[in-house]
Length: 162
Picture 1 (tube, rainbow, N blue to C red):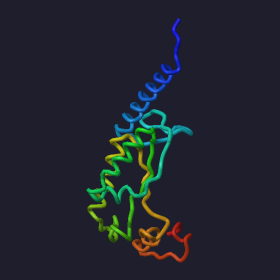
Picture 2 (cartoon, one colour; picture 1 turned 90 degrees about the vertical axis):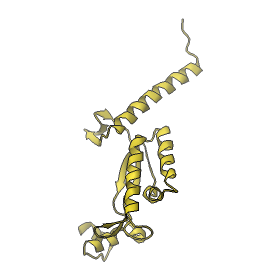
Picture 3 (tube, rainbow, N blue to C red; picture 1 turned 180 degrees about the vertical axis):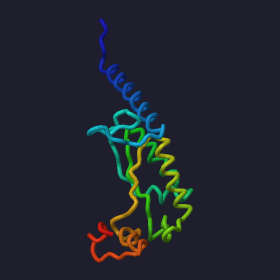
Picture 4 (cartoon, one colour; picture 1 turned 90 degrees about the horizontal axis):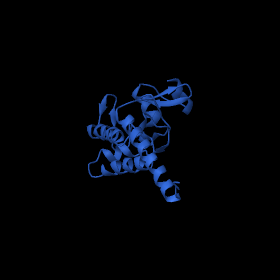
């Protein structure tokens, strides 16, 4: 009779987990987009369970070669912990090192930083949820976006009708 010790059971469960993680990372690395099937998320036809984190500063760090390694480190750690999604900013319309300097004019270093973030996310099998505008004016936000469209905001609610 075969007796499964607690140690062996833990090893088996861990190996099954690793196989599942590799399959998930492979599906994401193949470039699939998250979709829905009924009330479930799927990627390339397989179930996708969102287990994510927020990290607003990725593009800022990736746009500077001396701090780019922080982005790689975050994705390495996230992947090793089984995290499947990262929410990060894909904007900066004002303030320090803007992505969009003015309507139609972009900071090439920041665009390269965004490209690096997307590339590293794919490399480590982490999906991205990219925010394209901020609620606050520190980095441009809704007021800057509205000005770029030739509009002005008299209240926070105005943005949603521009």
